[in-house]
Amino acid sequence: MRLLLLVLTLFCGQQLFAQPAPSGEDKTEFNQTDNKGMRQGPWLIRQPERMGEPAYFEFGYYSNGEKTGSWYHLDVNGVPEAIEQYSRNVRNGEVKYFDGGRLTVVGHYRGLNPDVIIDTIVVEDPETGQERLVPIASERGSVRHGLWQFYDPRTGRLLREEYYQLDEKVSSQSFGLSKADSTYYKQRDAILPHNLSDKPMKYQKGHQFNPYGK
Image (cartoon, rainbow, N blue to C red; front, side):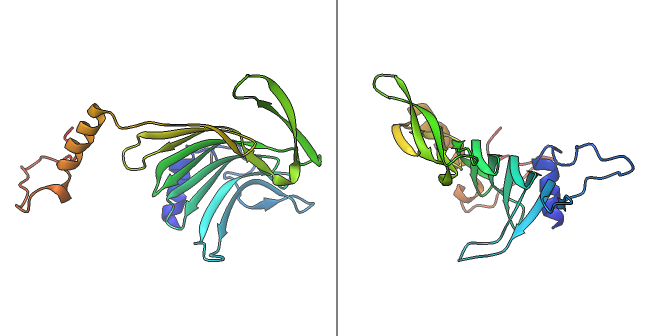
């Protein structure tokens, strides 16, 4: 738990802890409800293991019982797994997903209006560029809508871009490894400790070994 709280402080950039406290209080209170029983303010929630899915933590803000703004998803060791934007309790806006704490996906969701049965979204024809309004059932919550980018978690290199409209992929582009990039990654990997020879590595006193050679 101490590790998790440290991650909360560093990873949020003090977003949760920099909120002004009410008069007479010197700290932000978590997991509060109002007199109507609705969740308000910052919440830190531990979700138990369920249906074969591992336990995890999530934290962010509630407004009148609905998730709003940035919500952070962490594993039980405090390693980030996702950052999602919410509006009216549905995903809406940019999302980021991680593998072992390393960025793998940046995408965009379009949240649907929970106050209506049918919402309408502007969709552009990929061939003609003409726009039209498309009705969609709000019970779906949110749909992939916009640019999605996929990264190599080890190198951070952009692998692929996909563009979605109403959960349907309308275009995709992959990015191959250039000759220069290939040479760089091979040279970098070659000097990692596990790829070096079996001879013991010698360190000069006061010298810190940098596996990236920089």
